[in-house]
Image 1: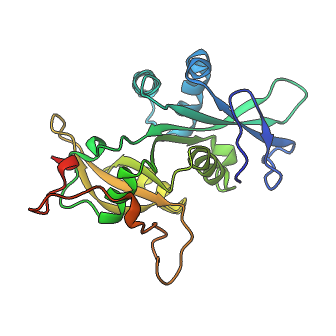
Image 2: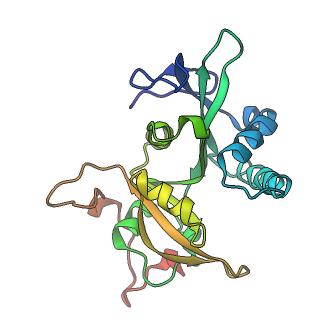
Length: 235
């Protein structure tokens, strides 16, 4: 899964077939293409989310606001999955998007406690990518599509670590991320918001006895620390 699929370039998943037969293709969308497909993406979100009856409209509008904010972020990228079930136009069945985490560590402000050193190190080296949304159509769940989407998005950006913030009260979402290989490293809270979020990370490095978490340990990428031991980039 190391080949890059850029905007408009579809690449078939040879190891994956949709539940209704046919094939599934992954391709990247630019920020402009994502905005053009915003309504289709919102439809997929409503279909894939555990939305309570009567809350579909509010859930859809909330997703569209988040998407509008994310597409403006530097380095925004999106990967979609389309199924060729019939001779008609491909059907959107999955999507993942996000942006690179800035090296200054600002994205982690709000993390409770001390950020793990490996995570801080990878952030400083520019190898962390924040995934803000992963969604898969209910008909395609439990078939590994979410894993393909997140892996392709991260490898496209040569990221060693994926990062995500999930509302801790959304147990279904937390369980889904953990089933895709993510692990919980702590709590996070925005200064202006009451919600407590779980910080989830997905290491892409090869696990070994020396690196059981899969995270790279490379002293060449560490930021210099001041004499008092405080990281100047995290103030």
